[in-house]
Amino acid sequence: MNLYGGQVNKLIEELEGLPGIGSKSAQRLAFHLIGLPEEKVNRIATTMMEARKNVRYCAQCCTLTDKELCPVCANKNRDHSTIMVVESPRDLAAYEKTGRYEGVYHVLHGAISPMLGIGPNDIRLKELIKRLEGDVNEVIIATNSSLEGETTAMYISKLIKPTGIKVTRIASGVPVGGDLEYIDEVTLYRALEGRTEI
Amino acid sequence: MNLYGGQVNKLIEELEGLPGIGSKSAQRLAFHLIGLPEEKVNRIATTMMEARKNVRYCAQCCTLTDKELCPVCANKNRDHSTIMVVESPRDLAAYEKTGRYEGVYHVLHGAISPMLGIGPNDIRLKELIKRLEGDVNEVIIATNSSLEGETTAMYISKLIKPTGIKVTRIASGVPVGGDLEYIDEVTLYRALEGRTEI
Image (cartoon, rainbow over all chains, first blue to last red; front, side, top):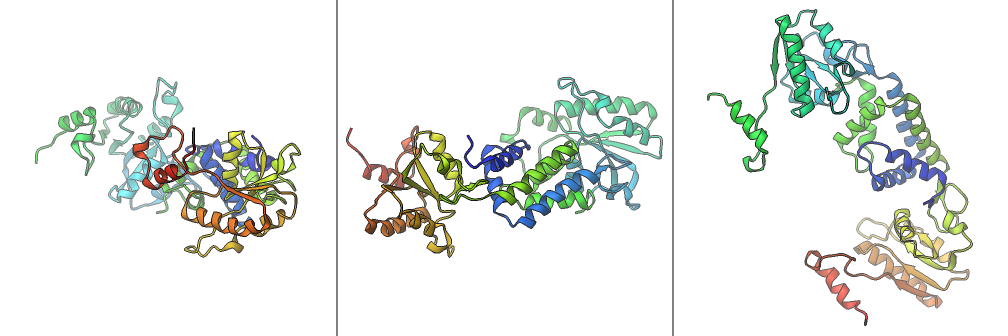
């Protein structure tokens, strides 16, 4: 339905293609953009293009950055002998927000998923193995608690164990503040299995 | 927290400023954009800038369009003597989707709201009054059923009535498929007041 003439529709279509943006939000966004001052729209558009052009993988941990090394890897005060393996830069961001992790990271950019045809070579695993040649004491696997995340964790653990480096997995259990009655059985079972003495 | 270096953060901040996009979706969108092929990102950015530059108000009904007249106003088969007054281009789109309205529109771009300090001169009302000098039989007021929408409807109705042109208001009542028990009292009362013989 061509209601507004080609250019508005084209903008709505482009926005609809983005993740989490349905047809209603695309319309709202498009009208919002059209209502903004021209220099502001140009600034947003330029930021998009420049970020796309200049952002790349950190040479060490593979997270996204616009420098050779990301701020975490470039920080000499972090413990570079402890590597936490995560699936995405967003997971890295989540752990950084805790403010309690002193080590560095490795971002896989995905997880092994036979269902989706994603194998070990499709994620940044080779880069992780290469880092183990350096001075590494512990690899903490913090992939998601999904089928793919667990598969990936198992795979990495088997790969690293022969090297003698300590491999750990973050705990699975009841989230803090979580109400037991709303938590699924698998999580409850995991929480029981992983119980510790107090 | 500077996790990714300046350019990724800058992009996330720009996206967070858009309506309906919180900090999590901004992150997800930014990473999605950075993962797209460069020419695709450039195309989206260019579409944004061009739409902003070329889109303007339709010379007749004030909806958004990239031509002098919007497709509805330019269509000679529509009934140009019936004008439906709506608050926004999205409302126009909603009525066009019904496929049952043959007349033309007038988009106010807002509603009168003493609370927000929006008066009759802040919306496209003068343009509507000007159109009434032509050959107009009926003005259908389809502003929202909110306090502002009703205020605007009353105001326009009082303004037009002395000219002798027929002014109508779209019906208020129970939505089709609506379950009475979940509908608010005001709507139920309106539905009762607006009852018709069957």
